Amino acid sequence: MRQLRQPRLAEIVAAKLRDDILAGRLTEGDSLPRQEHLFTEFRVSLPAVREAMRILETEGLVSVRRGNVGGAVVHLPTPQRIARTISMVLQTRRTNMADVSGALLHLEPTCVALCAARPDRAETTVPELRRVIEEQHEAFDDPEQFPIRARRFHEKLVETCGNETMIVIIGSLEIIWTAHESTVWSEASLNEETDPDSPMARKSRRAALRDHEKIVDAIEAGDGARAVKLAGAHLAATRRSSLGSANGDVVNTDLLDNLDYSTH
Image (cartoon, rainbow, N blue to C red):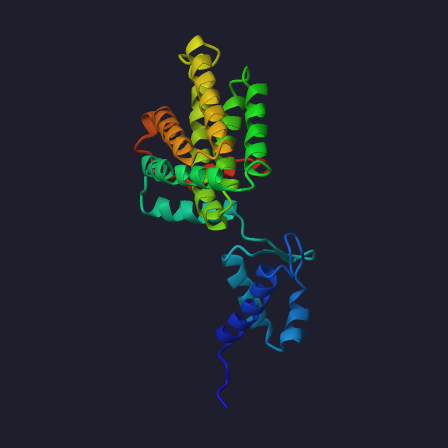
C-alpha cells in the first residue's frame, strides 16, 4: 500500500475544512477546533494539520492567531477580499487606473440593463437605488460625504442587478475604483485651489444627482436601452473628472486599506 505524503495529507485536511466553510457548515467568525483536536479527528500528524492551516490561510479562508489564545478563525470569501486579490494581480501587471475605469465603462452599463430587465425591480432594485439617492440629497451640502454616497450608487447598481457572477466580479472592480476615487476626494479637499462649496462644485454634484435620478427612472420603467445610454454618458463624464492627473497611476492595493467596508 502506497503511503500518502505529508503535503498530500495536508491537502486532504484543507479540502475538508474548505468544503465546510464554502458549504456554510462553518460561518464568518467561527473558530476551528484546536490543532490537537484536528490531529485526532483526521488521524494525521500535527505538521500535516499545520500545513493545512497554512493552505487555508493563504486562500484567505482562515486567519491563524498565535499564542495562548491562538486558533484559526473562519473568513468567508467576499467581494472585498476578492477585490484585494484582483488588485494585487493588476498591480503586478502594472495596470493603470484608466484601464480599470475603462473596464467599468463597458461593464457597469451591462448591470444597469440587467437591473431594468428584472421583473421584480420594483421590489428589489428600485427601492435600494432610491434610498441611496435620498442619502445623496441629505449629503448634498457636505462635500466630503456626497461623493461617498454618489459612489455607493454605482456599487448598488451592480449589487442589485440580480446576476451573482456579475455582482462578485464587477463588484470587486467597483471596490478597487472606489479606493482610487477616495484618494481623489482627499486630494481635492486638501487642494487650496479647489473650493468644494464653489458654484462649479455644487453644479457638478447637482448634475451627478440628476443623472442618477434619470437612470433610476429608466430602470423603473423597464427601459433598458435608455438606462444604458444614460449610464454610459454619466460614466464617461465622471471618469474624466475622477481620473484627472492620475490617468497613468498604477493600481495600488494599499488604497483598499483606507476603505470602510461596513458601508459596502
